[in-house]
Image (cartoon, rainbow, N blue to C red):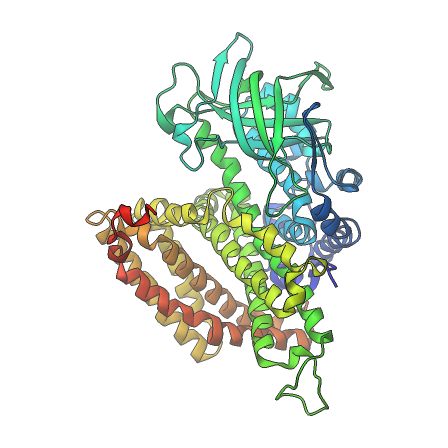
Length: 590
C-alpha cells in the first residue's frame, strides 16, 4: 500500500507537451541531445532507482532513525542508507547538474527538478543529503577562489564528499545579524569558533568527508548582516593529493529528536578553533550563502510536491479497495469502494489537481533557471528576474498546499491514515518541516512582498502579470475559466498597485498581508498554468485520450472548487493590518 511509483508520464507531459522543453534544451544545451526519448529514458531510470532502492528504505528509516555515538561524535544512518548512497553515486546522480569543469554532467535544472521530486517522494530523508551538497556545489562554483575549487569541487560533484550549510545558532535563527561564530586569521587560513544548530547532514556515515559552509565574523567585521563572511570548513583536512588527512576541530555534539525526516541527521555542530578558508571576499558571506539558500528553497518546495504525490498514490489505492457504505453514484449492492463517495472524491481530486499543476510550475521555474544560466544576455537578465520572483512563491506555496494535500491523504484513509503502518502520517510529519526550514514560509512571503514587489516598484511583478495577461489573451479554454482567472488577476494587479502606494504610509501593512498576498500570487500562477495546459492538450503526444480527459476534469475541479478561495484572500488583504495590530502585547502574556 505504501509503495511509490514515479509519475513519469505526467512529468513527460509537463516537459514535452506543455513547455516544449526539448527545443529549449537544444538551444541551451546543444551537446546533450536531450530529445523526448532521452528525457524519458532518464526519468524512467530515476524512477526505477526511487522505486526499487529508495522507497523500500523510507519507512524503516523513519522507524529507526539516525543513531548518535556521543563518545565518537559519530552519526550512523539507518540500515541500507550507505549502500543506497553508493548506488546513487555509482549511477552518477550526484553529478547530474554539476559543472562540467568539475566532472559534472551539466544537465538542465528543469529536468533535475523532476528527478528531485521523485527523490523526495520516494525517501525525503535520503534526498536531503545530496540536496545540501548540490547547494554547496552551487555556492563554491560561483564564489570560491580557484584553489578551493580545485581541491573540493570535483569531490563534491562526484558525491564522494558531501556538503552542508551552517547558518543557524542557538540565539540567531531568521535574524542572522545576531550570529556570534568567530573567524580569526592564522596566516594560511582562519580559525572558526562557535556553535551551529539544525545542521542537516552535519555528521553521517554516507561519505568519507563533509564540507561545511559556515557563516562567521572576522575580528574587524561591521555589526549586523553586513559583517558576515563565508568559510569552507572540512571535517577532514585534505592532503595535497586530494585524500582525507588530519581530522579538523569540528564535531557533532548531538542530533535532534524530530517530528519527521528522522533518517536525515539534524546536528548541533561545535567548531573549536577549526581550520577554515574564506570563500570570496570578506563581509559578503550572506550574499554568497543566498546563492546556496535560493537553490535549496526550490529544492525544499519540491519536497511539498513529491510527498503530496506519494500521499495521493497511497490514498487513491486505498480508496479503490476499501469497501464502506452505499454511494449514490453506484447501483450495485453495497458496500461500495469509498472512491465512489462524493466527499472522498473531492479530497482525491484536490490532491491530484494540486500535484499536477504544481509540477507544471516546477518545470516552468526550472526552465527560467536554465535560461538565466545559458540564454543570451537579454534572456539571462529577464530569466533571473523571473527566478527571483518565483522562488519565494514556489518554496512557500508548494509546501503550504503540499501540507494541505498530505493532510487530506490522512483523511481519505480515516483511522488507517492515523496509524503508522499505512505511511500517510509519515508524509505529514516529513513534510511539516518544509514550511519552516530554509526560511520560514512567513519569511518567503515577506521576501516576495518586500524585496520582489515593493523594493523594485513592481518591476518583477509586471513580468508575471504580463505573462498571465498573455495566457488569457491567447487561450481558447472555457470562457468560464478565463473569466474567473481574468477577474482575479485584475484584482491582484489592483492590490499590488495599492500595496506599493500604501506601504510607506503604513509600515506594518506588508507584514500583515504578506502571507495572503503570496497565496494569491500562487493561485493566479496555478490558474494560468491550467489554462495553458488545456490549450496544449490536443497536441499532446505523451497522453492517451483518457489521460487528456483526466486533465480536463482536474482543471474543471481546480477552477470550480479550489480557485474560488481567492475571493477570501482579496477581502483579507484589503482588511489590512488593523485587526492584527489592534490588541496590546499584554494579551499574549498568559
